[in-house]
Length: 343
Image (cartoon, rainbow, N blue to C red):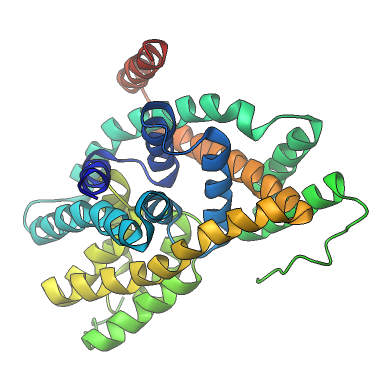
C-alpha cells in the first residue's frame, strides 16, 4: 500500500499535460518498469475507463490501485494522485489575485507543452502494436480519427467504433447483446449548491479539459459565480500543473468560496470517479467472457489510442512557435527514447 501511495503521489507531483500524458507515464511505470499489468491489459483498462464518466487518467490510477490492492488500493491510488494537484492548485489560486497573471500563465504553458507533446508521442509509438494489430484495428483507428475530425463527441465516437468492431469481428452476433448508455455582479452560492453542481458535472462528463470548459461555462459562468476570464485562467492552471486536469474545479471553487469552496468542488467532481473506477475490472472481466463484448472493448481501446493522437495533434499545434520550443521538444524526446533503449 505504501508503494502505491508513493507511486501515485509521485505521478501527481510530476504528471503534467493532461490525461494522455498521465496515461503515457503510467504505462511506462506499471507496464515497462514494474510489470503490474501487461500491455494488453493496460490497453483494455484504458478502453474501459473511456466508457465511464469522469477524468480518465484519475480513474486509471484508481483502477490500477484496485488491481494491486482491492478497494483500499483504489482509494489510495485516487487520493494519492489527486492530493498533490489539489495542494498546488490551491496555492496558485491563493496567489492568483496578486502574483499570477494571464501572461505569466501563458509563459509557463509555453515551456511545458512541448515536453508533454514528446511524452504523448513516445507513448503512442510504444502502444502502436497494441492498438493496431490487424487491418480491422487500422480501420477502427481511421474511423475514430474521421469522427474526431467531424467534431463528434468523444463518447459517441468510442461507442460507434466499438459497435463497428463487433460487426467486423463477430458478424453473426451483431450488437444486440451490447447495452449502450448513452459578466455581471458575481453571485456566491452556498457550499452545498457548489458541491451539487460539481457532483453533477463529475457524474456525467466525458472527455478532456476542453469538455470541462463547456460544462463550467454553462454551469458556473452562466450562474455569475465567476467570469469567463477567470474560467480560462482556471483551465490553463489545470492543464499546466501536475496531476488531474479536473483540479480546474479546485481553482474555481477557491475563487468562489476560498478553501471550503476548493474542497467541496474537488470532492464533488472527483467523488463519482471512485464509484466508476470500481467498474473497470468488471468491464475488463466481461470482455474475457463474451466474444462480442471483447470485440467491442477492442474497438474502444483502439479508438482511445486514436483519440490520444488527436490530443497530440491539438497540443502540437500550439506547442511550436519558435526554435526554443522545438529544441525543448527534441531534448525531451531524445531523453525518453534513450531511457527506452536502456531498458
